[in-house]
Length: 189
Image (tube, rainbow, N blue to C red; front, side, top):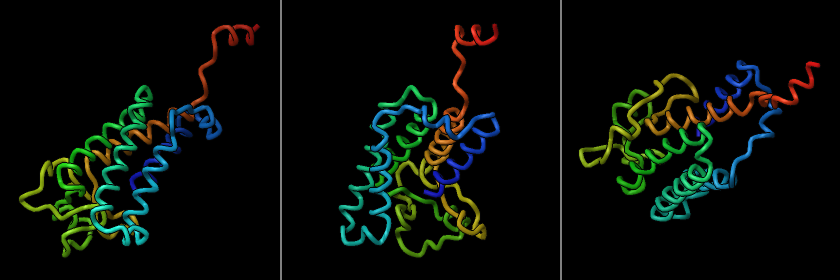
């Protein structure tokens, strides 16, 4: 979730830097945007105290289903570059998560660098990677170093692509619409 917050802030900043305006986001037309909201809601529930009564199996399936929802949204909106990039990132994450039984493998080195205690086998939606981890290079192997309050975390290449996609989506959507040739010519007379 932190990656999304940072990406949204970066997208808004880039949009303003490119001369865009927040009100231009009203023109953004995406198919079934509620799929993203539903996927985020599922992840908030299963990775918070709200999800503890569900049990591990339901949480793992919820994790996979949340990525299926995100991928469905990405396929429906693939013509938008930002959504396409975020969708590729979500696909990479989904592949790794499914290959590892519903968990994202996190390297002990990345967890240590982020200052996250890897004493238990799992950490939130991640599992501490051991020699049995599949596709670990696509897992949470990068980190924001510990000591940076609120930002210290581990992340994957998929997370990076999701962040870039969200940034591109917002920055490009904030730009002013291109003038229509006939309207522009009439306005200059």
